[in-house]
Image (cartoon, rainbow, N blue to C red; front, side):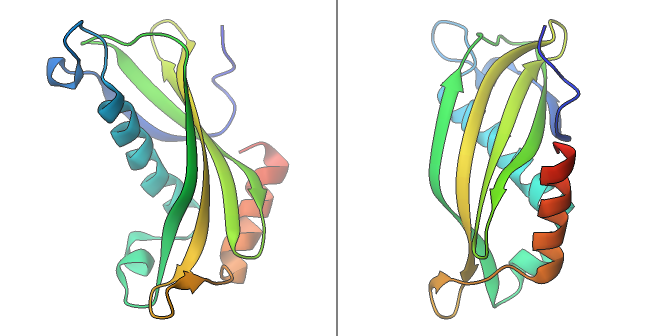
Length: 144
């Protein structure tokens, strides 16, 4: 059984038949979509709030994402995503989302994402606000 205590809960939901492919497994697009929803919750926990990201000046941009599929998911399965900081630097963050099958307590998939804090006017990476770096450092230290 996987360690479902690691990280922040950033998504919880169900797999619907429309999320499945021609052989009945949750499709790749849905994994990416659920991980994307988890990213928005994770950013909010880091103080990169929706209001901050919708404003004119700053945003986030993913520069790399790697997904590992471990166990199949089917319609009706309930999933939870837990997220944790792996590394934070001046302009870049590397984090992980782990998706669990809640009923079985098993890891269904995991993704590691590298993203940069973006100056939307200059179209280049820029430093995170100090409050974001501090929160990410605190989560990194706590395993979250």
